[in-house]
Length: 222
Image (cartoon, rainbow, N blue to C red; front, side, top):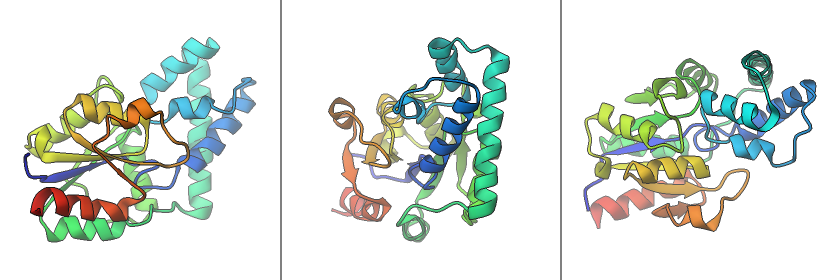
């Protein structure tokens, strides 16, 4: 198999420990909009970009564009207030893995469903100051996760074949996206586990980002 030359990171729930924050903020905004949501509603949204999230609320709750815009702005503002007050925690092992990638001259890409400006703002809030080689946001693509376009575009922008990349994901939508782009993927559980049928699409499983170094050593040097 091809040598891995780049690691493609999801952001929320993978690099940043933000899914809990987003859940709290989205559920408050849904409550303010009078939505009778279920305990699992938020989990359906993980990994979706803004367009897909809007389509979800239109299909499930009959939202208009204006209603969705009002709610999403509210959720965004709530999450920013949270970040300003408490900061944004980084997932265990990220900085060690980042140092490893730099030392071994492996490229890094961020492949997130958040819009690029929001993603970069949150990275700054989390004090992640080493730039990614490529950032693909939800506003960078026509079709977001679980479609293959986000990861395929990241590999293309890096000038690499998909076989030379390794994706790291916490969501079912993200794993489907990487798999359909023919990119090997590591699954790391975050807030909620995913179904076994999606787990089978992941090539590796890890408990934290710390274990990615061992996976890379095995793939590239054994």
